Image 1 (cartoon, rainbow, N blue to C red):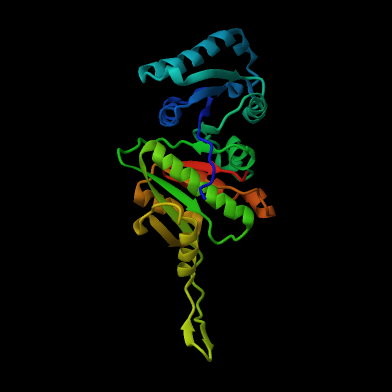
Image 2 (cartoon, rainbow, N blue to C red; image 1 turned 90 degrees about the vertical axis):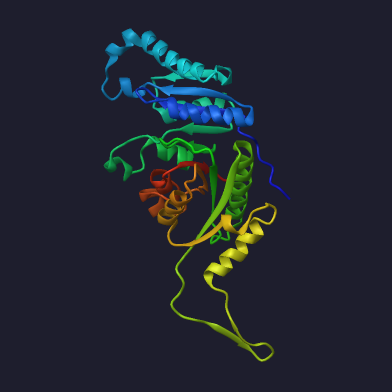
Length: 301
């Protein structure tokens, strides 16, 4: 039975002052057209005021607000896409994460779309940035936009984790596949599925009993492929779009995405379970930074 998936009917586009808004707005416009949806735009001006404490800007606050709004409207007007805009929110008194948390309690959105926030390598070590809030703590799906143009032939890469037999992970895998399938249909793309497995153990085990004799055990790759087929049996997918790849996801998933020239990869992120995940980051955060394409991060229900 297919999993019930809510379409992306209301998109929250998160922007920062002095950030080029054209690529995030282009993605949001495309999704609005694909899902017959709406977008609201959130612009944080917090960095203009803090930590510099440049309160002289307060005298020109209305001018700054007007400029930000006109930039958004001008871009969307040039694409004949102003009909998709429902609201434009500007925030300067709170950190973006706090302001967005508050906004999510007041309005209903299906997805957040933003470009990765640039920060120093030192700050990345401590997971204190805004992107970590979206990837790890924000309950909504988060679409991270990378600065590249899409091809005419589109590929969606669904990234599942077959190794983890936890029930919550099973549900998250099904959610990844269902949303990837729905997105593929909405934007007219080709869906690919990737699963990573650890390297084969260096010993060979051959099972034996009196009735059937010797029988070689399936390899790790074969076991993963068999499990993957159970997940995708409700989808009409050819063998050449199923990829069981040996290696660490942080390394092989970006490589496969680049090889396929994928436009977007869909991944899941369970809650941090281990101390080292909390301290140094998990696979979802690593992929958010290293993927050559857009990445859609899903959370457990």
